[in-house]
Length: 94
View 1 (cartoon, rainbow, N blue to C red):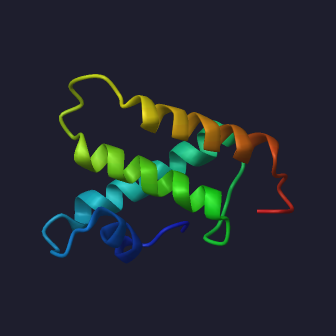
View 2 (cartoon, helix red, strand yellow):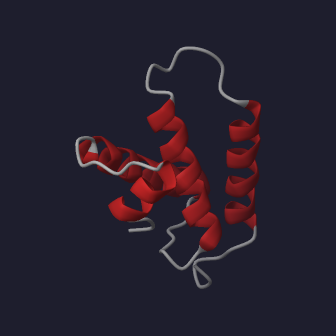
């Protein structure tokens, strides 16, 4: 696991347990997105992987209606981190 539920809740500034199931699902989806987009697996020691998971979880949590255009900042951040994780790491350095 790259990020924990507690870490994600701190990032999201959520202090209740009502949406733990939703946030856990978003964490799992973010980690799968990371593996699918880079072809690599990462653990919690890789700070870029953690940051990407935080960004994805926050975007999906805050924009659940999926209506409208993705934030340019979020899109650029995701693309940049995915490129770095794809091209700057090999399976022995994760």
